[in-house]
Length: 255
Length: 96
Length: 287
Ligand code: SF4
Ligand code: SF4
Image (cartoon, rainbow over all chains, first blue to last red; front, side, top):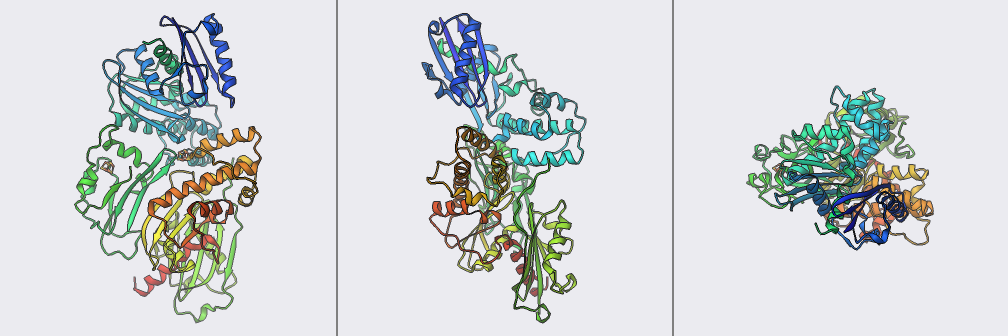
């Protein structure tokens, strides 16, 4: 059986195509403001890598905040279920999943049989999501890709008082004027998000093992801050952005 | 006076209200709170002619209470809050 | 990338019919906000002079500048002022003040003086915060909240939009009223997300006035929900910089179904007026 999962996030569209539980194709498209176009592009790429045609896919499952846009999908599944499913598939030991995307963050607690027992979501405020790093990179005049590695060079923690992305941006601008080293500010940025995520983790109650997924899992600076604050090892899958799409494809296959 | 400390942001409203007419400044809330967010001041900066001490949420904590109070608010359970329980005068309430 | 915040016109005023030399008690209030600073001088509990200036990079200087400007041309000097109260975000940094009182208490008191004893609800929308205050007939605060965590619902949020659209903050209010039909409000509260939403709308071909109308009504809606937490009771007064934005004020009035009282003076001086009134009371109590 061939199934597909499509995850429509705020910034990217991801898809995973499975044949009998094996990944045969995937795609990640940076969603422009035209989601339909990104979907079309995504399918083209995904189907090409899988070497199949659209009509060969038996079942398509959509997830993500924009899941309603996926008109070709047979059904929808919540972001929580998809993330949990994908995570457990990757590693059965996972009990806590932290999913930090561009505009949302989630912490999910899973029991020994892979069922979701609790979750917390942060949405609608940029301060606890990837959007925060994006705004801060702009203030520091570095690219988003540079921000993570930069923060690892920090020698001294600086405090950031602002809790809001908008106020934090101006705070960073004045810190730049005060000649604060950029590496220290980059670390402060990641510490700030990690703080907010940690409080969500505490609310659901952390159990090991811990998996970090979503776009922010690729940010080494954030991963370091999170590890430091949670005082535990955190696993990050190689293709952290695809975990939810994978989960959706697995659910489509009835797994 | 009802003093609401906290904030509203895109994700919701998070306020701790202190009824300063009920608060006698005893300070029982301070050790009860694992997040150490309370303080008692001799003068109420919001009410310059008040004669007795009054509790408040520390200035540095006001913008973070959603995160700090997460300690006492597990998602699927609603245990009694330590601060609310510690205040014999019944001056403390949470909006969320 | 230096950031320019509010660019309200600075102002100053002296009572045409008063003479400080014949006054018994001269007090002052200085409100050092994040964006603008005001100094108010009162003679025997009446308004004598005030100034409204931009806040500079440090609070003590801003306080001194505002005070000097208020005193300009009056012949009155600092040493003749018996008591000065500092308020606002920089209240502890007013070098010549004897005491600091929060802007909550001062706004309540000031609104009572400026708008009369019937005022019960005061909304102050500043550059970086938003306050909702319920007061009694004496101007004493009975319920309040202050939101300074989130940029939504503050002048700063509006500034982000002014920048995005390339229009001056002074024109935004009028412009937002130039729409034939009221568009649906921007759906995100968060300024960061609202900004990307607005960029999308601009790309879709929405004219600037429609985008700013959509944001102004979202902002009004947000403030209404804050006000509801303390309970909205007439009369209603709006102070602070946003009070000068007709686009937000008119939408707020419509949603609340209450007209805000029309100010006689600069809407930004309420905090400093309250501070000067407290100063007088403190002189009388010998504190
Ligand atoms: S809920 Fe807990 S952390 Fe929050 S104020 Fe009360 S005791 Fe403190
Ligand atoms: S404006 Fe700031 S605090 Fe408000 S919702 Fe956005 S990021 Fe959060």
